[in-house]
Image (tube, rainbow, N blue to C red; front, side):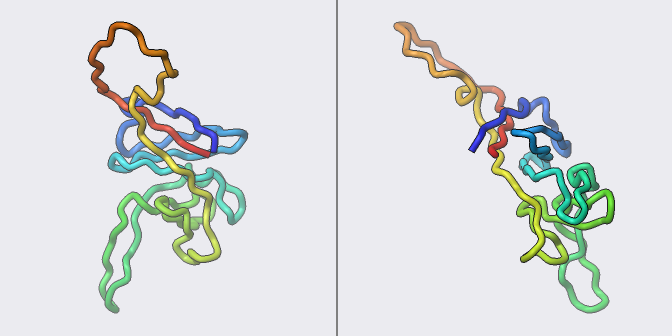
Length: 138
């Protein structure tokens, strides 16, 4: 699995997305309420840039005549034909068992994880991590 550093968490505010290239593949990274998701930026229907679509919710199962909205900002809608995908799993809303988009693991790592390994020195000093990095694995 290849590792690609995307941005500092402070440079990737809540409710934003970024498109990145990893080994020739376009991937959309989403920050939704501090949770990060990564999906391939290609709709399986006709190849549209899926991650440029709108991020919404959907109607949940309910009683006849009752309409319950939920999953706010977890449903990605293709900008070409409106196909919808769950950003948490990549599964299509209409046919989740056979239609999906590739997802990738994303983590927030501390500055210590971003530094190269340095041999121990004679003197040591306390270190405080104040910021993390958004990292995607492909």
